[in-house]
Image (cartoon, rainbow, N blue to C red; front, top):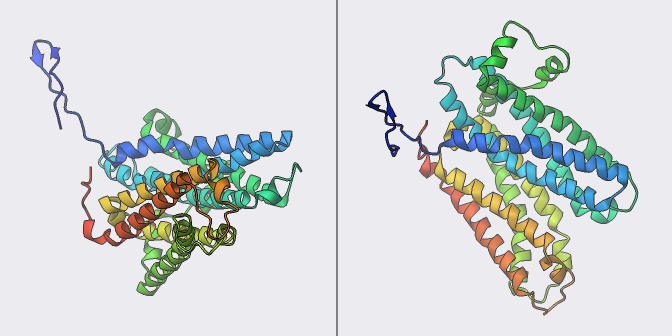
Length: 345
């Protein structure tokens, strides 16, 4: 920690120490993104349905998919923030547990909403037909409304922790109405953690599922990336790209098992530098995939035939994808070796 130049107060020097960046700061930076992002996505979706605008429908689904990805580091950094706030005797532990329980429930709904949005983007020919409504859009709208409400509750319970003026006004009162109903479905963080560690066979099963999901993901994305780089040139791109739903299924399995594993051993993962580098690689992969599909790169290779070479831009995205996926796999293997490499604040 580096001291600032000491200001003068009453003739005395006061040295102000600047705290280093930690997970609590990261949580404060990220925690508004899932809340505001979900509301923005929901607003865009409603406007697109009212105005029957396919471009806005597509934009809303992209927002949901992006927010679902960013919700992961937001949730994971909460454990680091919890470690810092537990030192404050003025903050009841019950408020922290209520906030964490609300965050767990909202996270699962956010990930389902993001998964539905990805499916909608993949089935764009069926979803964006010029018709104002479809069963897929109705399902996405329903989940996004619930998710927006749950995210709002997460923000409210987090505000109770950091704003004593709100907390003091509510002390002695019990939750009522919709909040009381929602609280019934919010899991107890401690019991949820115990459930994940109930049996070594369950944990082994989750890790096996995680590996299966990774195999599905890397197997389909990897062969597509290698083809764009010039390998297996006898294969056309279109049939390989039609395997993308298997990659999406694998990523969904990995996301679910990864969240459950984190909930089972939160301190093991939170204060591990390899875990956070893996999360950074995943975020960069999401950005890489978005840039590939939103730029002209995808359209230049979509109908690429046998023995045809992909453009340089497409090769760049393919190479970046392979490097980042290799980083995800390698960093996942090194998580155990880098346990407790981030200090608890």
